[in-house]
Amino acid sequence: MKAETSRRLLSLAAIASVVVLGPLTACAPQSEGAATTASPGAGEGCVPAHAFPTLADGVLTIVAGESPVNFHSETPQGPYTGISYELVSEFAAENCLSLDVTLGTAGGSQLALQEGQADLMVTMAIATPERKQVFNLSDRILFEGMGIVSSDGSYKTVEDLKGRQIGVQTGASWGAQLRELYGGDVIEYSDLASLGADVKAGRLDAAAVSSQAGLTLLHGLEMVLVEDDDDYPGLTATYDFVWPSTKGNDDLTAALNEYIAHVQEGGTLKTILFESGVPDEFIDFYLNGRP
Image (cartoon, rainbow, N blue to C red; front, side):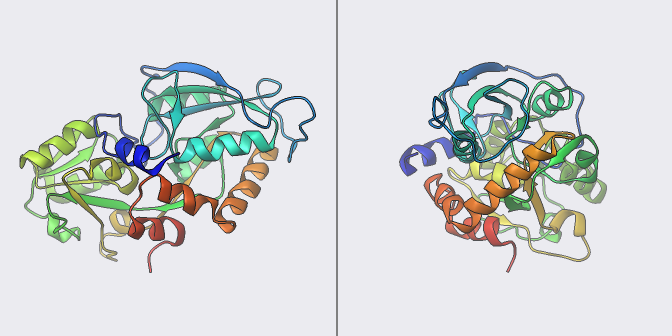
């Protein structure tokens, strides 16, 4: 994937957001479409790197919430790009599998996986005890934390947001925690496009979002990772971004974990982040966590 193309994709804030801290949602998938893509490794004579069961022989059935950072397509049917797509394509190739892709909302993807309609959700999700009850969770792929998006990057702490008009994503627990602190000054948005537009127009002072979701808003705006603060651990902690998969398919989880370790140690993940237009300071955070 070319860096120029990826940077263009990262600026498309009109694309639906990923709600990474919200609880498991019962909403149905929206605007979903499915497409099967051939994996370079699939075909006669291919020897899989791992053995694990899938819903369909020779196919890895995946669901993905639409997001330029994690998984992106101009249409539900593809073609697909993004960090998660680059990774899952290589994983499928190594295991001689084609990909059956369904692209929809983050909440709809979780529901589809929970109902047994997919092997794997490749929209990265924050590892939570609630998700662990209903899914197998991979090892950490990237670190994640709350980003604060504003016109000039001047808001850096939870205290900086006091008395300001703050936009958050609907369903995100960061939003619920901020509302407990600052009440009506915290406004929920169902999509990042409107949230980013209101920050840019000055109708909001800032947006408090997943930092990876915030990367879609950097066209004309700036983002900082919220500063660590023991007084607000839920808002300023560092979290693990993982892939949820079918509960009980431990062989698939083991294969994913081995692959994740390989791309982390071998530098592939860092290269994909760079080529996806992720700023250097966030690449360092995603790979290594806070200093």
